[in-house]
Image 1 (cartoon, rainbow, N blue to C red):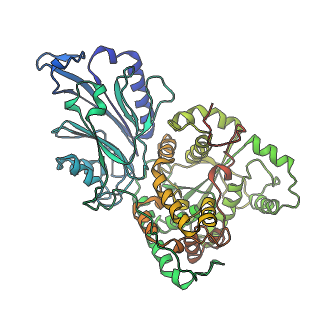
Image 2: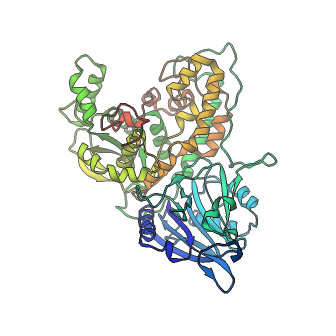
Image 3: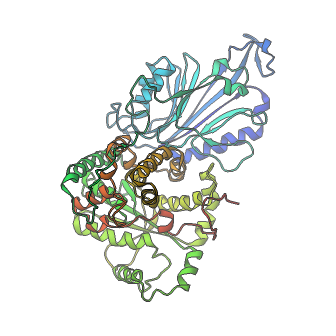
Amino acid sequence: MCGIFFSIHADNNSCSDSRFLSICHALKRNNADRGPDAQGNHRIHITTSTPISQGISHQIDHNYGRVRFEVDFYASELRLRGESPIFQPHVQRGNILCWNGEIFDGLEVPLHENDGVKMLDSLHNLKTGSQIRDFFGTVEGPYAFVFYQKESECLFFARDPLGRRSLLIHRPTPDQPYLLLSSVSAGLNAGYNFDDVSTDFIYCLSLRSLASIQDYNRHLQCLPRSTPDRSLPYARPSKINESLPPDELAVIESASIPSYLSQVVDDLIDQLNRSVLLRIRNIPRISGPSRSASVAILFSGGIDSTVLAFFAHKHIPLDEPIDLLNVAFENPRKLGITTQESLSNSPRRAKKEKISQLNGSNEPTGTYLVPDRVTGLLEVEELRRIYPGRVWNFVEINVPYQESQSARETIESLMIPGRTVMDLSLALALYFASRGQGQIRTSLGSEPEMYTSVARVVISGLGSDELMGGYGRHRSAFYTGGWEAVIKELQLEIDRIPTRNLGRDDRIVSSHGKETRHPFLSLDVVRFLASLPIHLKMDPRADLGVGDKMILRLLAQRVGLVEASSRKKRAMQFGSHSARMGGEKRGDVDLV
């Protein structure tokens, strides 16, 4: 994980005022939080080929009669590969690369080497924009980058096809005459207007052709990631298999695996096993006790996070703990509802009483016994029972209302350009969960001990619902339009992944000097699941907890996670009680 900041402006006094310098300083500072191990800056000047006769009134280099621009590259480094920190930007023979990403496939990166260095080595041998575009279509992993090619004096920038890493852009305006690219904003500021860089293209800006920074649009090429005449394995997310199930297909009624699904379940096990392995192996130990966890999992006790915990367990040395991060909020809106409802005859109360007994608490309806805490505590017991040789650190992250509100300004700054109530609800949960400050218990009923996770890699289960039919809208689509409607809805899910919330999530988690990794969103896993006929992934005719994400539930059954296999879908913001902390009625409205 790294932070990237790039700026270009005309080399004159008008842009070197205190406001511009203040913006650059703030953006560099926030990007430094993303990469605490090393930071670096590299500055060049470019004299364009546009003659004076075009009437440009910027600073003129009188030796050449051209327009002169100042170009800054800044990057920070969170070391998750190699044996020592590598300072960025990477510079080689005048080429410059700011790299924020991980390469998991398509380019051989020895385990103890830096992938940014390898990327620049490969880019150095490429001459044209189409060659660079095609090269990125052959590598798999989350990334965002800014690359300057000295020979052509072109600037390339992009995010990976799923948008798993953040990159924001401020386009030049008459009042803000500079181009900015940054992994993160510095909050609301009149000096810039950031948008997410689209994942649809590799962008190429000819710097030598600029007559003015406001010529930006005229000299920007948008190179489509894939073209009809060539097939690149990692250029775009895959298309859904549109074949329909047979008319006589029986409804899945239990978690037993029908014979026609047995091989598919085994294939999914292989896919997820490899995806998790690539994302957790050989993480260098930077700080903390020798037996501290190097990997943490955002853990609700649901099927997604539990399956990922299972695969992580297979590949992490047995003497190393795994941190399970479970967040709960004091939410006055929810507490008010709870006190008004009678829980005396509720099955939920019985479950909470069981949890309170496990935890040694006499307060079954306590502030932090939110739904995700309840299922998390139940599920960690299943993991401990099946895999007793592993230390599973169940980290209870309890967030008082006042603390959540005190952090709100910081979180809203990180969310930008996201500004909705829903953005805030999700960002709150992710911010405090990934920070990893909470408490653990050494045994059932023991007193809690303060604990902070030092794991730099945070595993997220995001993507499973989109790929395997886990949302209620998929069931609704079936009842209104049949299997064809479900297929269309799942294709929309894949198409929407790059524009939803991965960039926001990256900005939130990385503010703690940590990196999110998404095993379900490996482009190989996406391709495998997209290639399956719809009825091999889900059955909207079956009960909730059976037919939704059917293939994943069958996988959980096969590997022994019986309790997890039947848990129903619950969104993070509702399970943790971070939703609508201010009492708002809707999540899609903008924050005030």
